[in-house]
Length: 558
Image 1 (cartoon, rainbow, N blue to C red):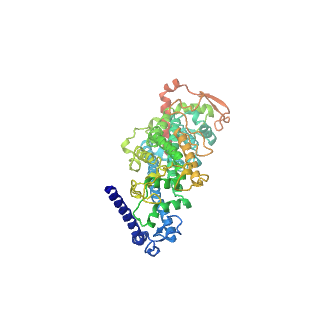
Image 2 (spheres, one colour):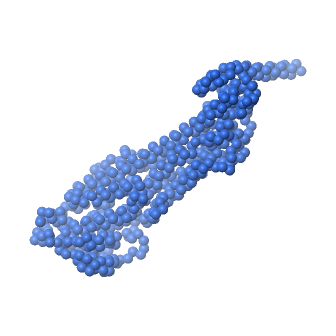
Image 3 (tube, helix red, strand yellow):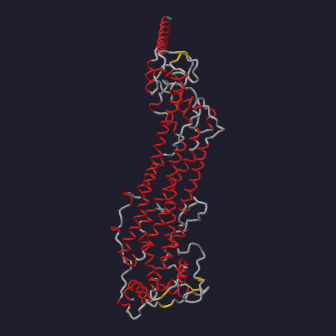
């Protein structure tokens, strides 16, 4: 009995001690004055001792170290402090992907420039003046590729540009290998119109079109994804400034001041409910955000594999030279098909048949080009290294929005266990932690959220992510659907006969005028059979190659 009496006395003394300590603090608001002043506010706003808290709108209305003016100022301060960590995390995310975008962009631009320089150096060494006199064609080719990379199909139709490039190259080479003839513009139009049917460059143009289209579409779409990410984050990262969110922030962060407990931090679950209420709309981004990131990761795998921009652009000089060599080797067959389809051209008046072609050996054939002579890797890195780095960042960014409350309500911002502020006192937080997203806030005990009014800006960004995801998925298959008038650019497979779709006819139909200057109309020319190509006469080949050499010497023969 005596033991029980002693325990009761001790308990009473403890309660009285705590009560007297709290009352002592309220009688003396010095700790609050110091903490309030450290926030940049006027210390004179704080009463020297506790006052009647009846005017307060948010905090408990008992004896208090807060005035209504203080409560209003601390309400705005609390909202600023809630926004700060969210803003910092969002800014870091924006910076991360802006940097990756800039690294990729620098790499791709340098890769295009290096490919142009490599081709120029290779062709000067291999073809000499024959290339120099036609260098503008190749310069324009790379300028068009760069414009397509920067602006897409709105600036350059890649299919048309490539068709024009090969047609122009055929016209120039056709004149060189047939220097003994004169060709009118109408005649050359006939030749150009049937470049694809003649296939003077073998299968190189078709394969290169497929490779370039897939690589450029994947690259451009991936870059647009990297551009979109920081734009979305910037637009949606602002924490709601609704009165209920500001009120909840004030109650959580600064109502302890009013009771003199300036060092008391909120309970973690209490913090989670407040943040989930204030970030309810942002959490609804998570599904489309994660779908977008999955599509980016999938396309990144394509960039490392079959749609590798670097593996297409780096050897493009060799590929084009292979095409030129193929034209040289089959020049007689190509010329005969053209003569039959477009008409027999007139002999050139400037051509000196008396000069022996044996005296003008041709040295412009393709020679192997040393890889050591190529420019160093673009931007001091490689596509694989860039892609591996960005994939790590993309994976890390998943569930960014749904985990924001957990990220903010951690560390020094909260107090562990029951030794924390629960919104009314220093005690355990008893309410259930509600889920993420706008719909779940109907039962939020700490923030009043109108679930019938979703944030318009955030909904628009959800739509933007959904659209971008569809573009990324299309690019994964080699298609660009990002503009209304774009055509299917998948281009078929990378190997085959050279016909993009069946049937692949063996006949070539020319619609041309009826004389050498104006070739015949609707004449049908049977293409040379594969077996014929292998047994073409050596004399014909020599004539074709020597014709090129004579073209170079023509100024000296006049």
